[in-house]
Image (cartoon, rainbow, N blue to C red; front, top):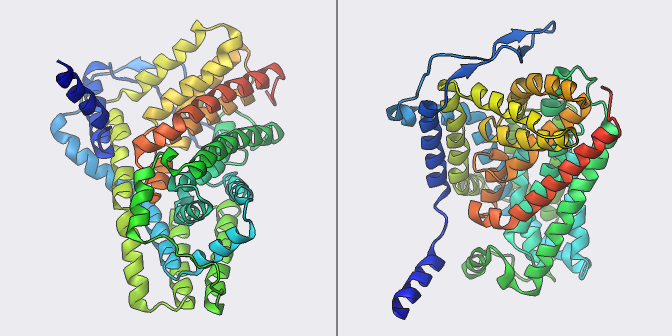
Length: 474
């Protein structure tokens, strides 16, 4: 009997979460099944004076069921991948281009020397990095920053941390900042417009919220990083770090090597690129194509400055792109879920049911519940601006009825649209960053789930405070 129990225990220990593709296919099949179980329903869409399409909150009605055939699922998957081409190739190209710069060796030497200079103060480097990405996250989604992940992974490994920390720097900095939406054009400006609020009104409190969220995330990350540095076996991605060391691909001990003119040229080109991308995204409103095109230019110029030939640049670009194939396919496949539910006409039914839940709770809990409901909706509608177009016309009347300020409602929407993006496998902002670092979804979830609960509790407190201070304008 004891031997049987031992075998059972060993089997349980060996069990691991399935591959992300398996998880996504399961969710796709589940969403297809829901089109048979959930009654089809719709809100009427109307155009306002500015020509924008809005949902009429009082118009929900059931329609004829339109279940999606399981035989059509493969086509939905293909269509979703094609529809996500802009995002997919931006992620692939930006990451591949940074790999070209890394292959010059300039950053190995530069970061090693930087860490030697900051010996014993590695946390300061992490704080600087998070601050930079927090500033970029005021308007830029962390998905567009995936190209910087290899650099952050290199920095963290040289500091004695692990690859997971490299991805977390960008997700906590840019992701945490963007989730609050202090200056987000695609999310906050759209939601406030639908709520009849001036664009970016209430900025002061949003900046306070941004600081609170990022500081909490930073403390959480530093505590984890310290544990890894004290004992590498504490790393959630310990096997990945061991494989990296065994492959010999880590930076060698180059403390005494000098930075050549070419090395300096590559580093300078990168920082000029960083400033250009930040300016383009924040001021000029660059999209995926602009960012990808910029990175291509950087790879060619930086590669030549670093002494690479055309063939060297091409080989390293192909190598970097290949590493992101799984992540890019995942980003495309994830869009299948919302497409199937839209085809089955059940998204409005689910949203309408969630809104009705709000009235069950006492008035004091309404802001917090607004955050929870938006987080649930985010699972079904992953596009921030698309979610705003559906949710805000429904939640704003509900907020007015229960006496919640519209600004509080928008803030709850932003939190709900943001934080859950870093836990669900359908999020491009999450999967692109962690896979660029070689981190799997189960590994990331093991690291992030506690922070997600802390962020969620903090968000509930912040929106409750917002309501208590009559966060306006109304």
